Length: 100
Image (tube, rainbow, N blue to C red; front, side, top):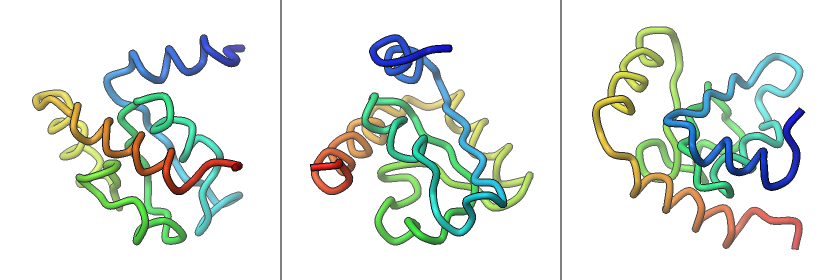
């Protein structure tokens, strides 16, 4: 298992970090929802109504609802730089979503 800095480094180096919000959490988020952006990772998540108004699709994260939209977002992420989204997700999480 990856922990601490190794985990954060892996999230950061990954082109896309897919986070499926499954029935055990929906409509809320799991911890990966915050771990990916705080590691400067590109967070691509399935629908998560609890945070849709806080984390804006295309600004702080990428989100999808359904297979077609997932494939479109993956294609976009593979062909476009996402540095601005990564940075905005990190800044937003640091400002508003830490244990402090």
